Length: 188
Image (cartoon, rainbow, N blue to C red; front, side, top):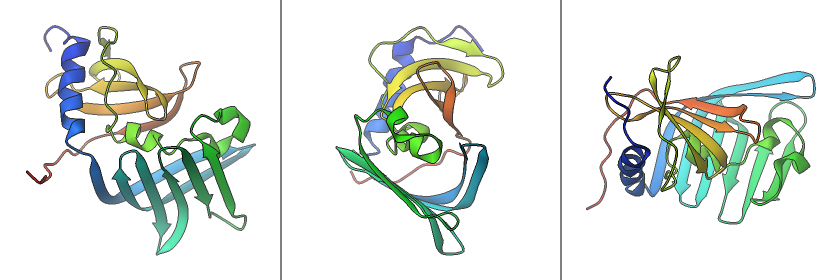
């Protein structure tokens, strides 16, 4: 494993990759789990993601039936929850406190999508990376587009393995695991 890299080394390498990915379209499968009151909710489906920073959009559908639409521009964000019989639309300013919106799915800022996909640049300065045994990687914290985030880097490749969006108490609100990296063609 060797000695831990400096925060600056991890941030510089990560930010260099992120800077090249300004406009993205991707498809895949996503699972979204959340709680509303005492009820646990779950949606799994085909996902399409559009990103042209600072704008983001995520559509989750199952058998061509749209379940969720999340999106944002530079100032506002929105969520269409089309799961079940009750249809919900939430819109808010990025500066709106999440607690003012209630709990459940609406407590997630769509800009957190950038964080969870590893597309948010790291702050210039940060604490020395610590070792996280359960993920076998170097962990750092940084402000994210959707709030505070904790990131775990692979010790060998120094690529992101896990990203956690955390609340003010340090509890994980959202998490993603990145497993299959691939090359992309970029103009120029």
